[in-house]
Length: 311
Image (cartoon, rainbow, N blue to C red):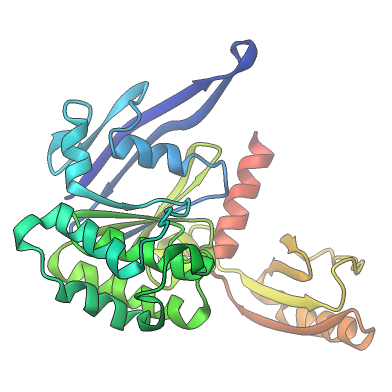
């Protein structure tokens, strides 16, 4: 086991002595050579938890053990063991990606640093065209990939990646996921911090869903999906973002994001779902639609919806 988070709670005090519980009694474990997804909306408490794993923040209660030793007792040790790609963009200034990644590699590995590692990463991510371009002249995606390489050029036993695919194009995003999976071949563990639930489902071994500081579910993607029952999901692309569609009574839960509409239904209503979707298409309200088994995104939506209702 690489990491053991035990009953961690962290509260912040705001103006007028108001309190915000960022992490509420969180507990989970991460195994050696595992990609662990930490999923949640912005403000769910993910970054606060990461900062405690790194020893930057101290929990109000609970403890975190990294390779068997408490981070509270030795925060500096935690930072030496972990490699991190932060959510914010790394300021490169006039450094080129090759210079920045090489510099970090030498700082972490010293005389044992192998420059071929930089070349291997750039080739794996198809970054050759940017390797010697000044950081100020790079696109957001190129800077994001550079920050990823800086985090993994000499990876620690635990690599923490906070939204690593932001601004990255679809082709290199797929290449990046392969590099992340390759990291685990030598026993390196990875924490993937993201709100992109659909993307995470394809790469993680286990996942924890966090909402408003609380852990709602933990397990493999298949275990998480089974936890919300055997449902089907209907996805529709609306002709207009403001299109007004009345939902049928048999819809179990619905979620809308712009012109994208998702809802879940009981398998017994598959035929009704298809007939209804076809009717919306005939009216010109829907461009296309699909029906498929439940995804982890559906589980995420249902679990967080339950949390709101219970609150």
